[in-house]
Image 1: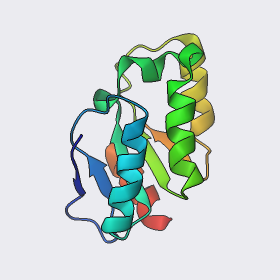
Image 2: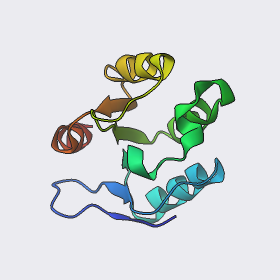
Image 3: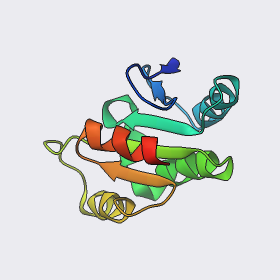
Amino acid sequence: MQIQLLQGTRSPILECIGLIVDLNDALTIVAASYELNTNRVLLRDRQLPEEFFELQNRFAGEFIQKLVNYRITVACVFDVGRSFSERFGEYIGEAKRGRQFRSFADESEAVDWLEEQ
């Protein structure tokens, strides 16, 4: 997995530019956040493994919880054209109001929110 600072932002925000393949990638994000002195991360659904979208296997909850435990603020952009299970859709809906993890349909809104944190 590759991580870099998102360009063109007022505050430092990490972005994952490679694929997330397992739960240990959360710790890679945490390490990068310390190295690059930021606690803000932007994720995109296309970088997440299919396991993330299947709530019964707990990947999404465990992955996000690892980040939140280290006080990482996470914005995840989910493509509105992509179909999700009903339960995952509910999860995304609930995450639209989160304080440390929030879901967005628009990347610019996600970046704006992260910059405010």
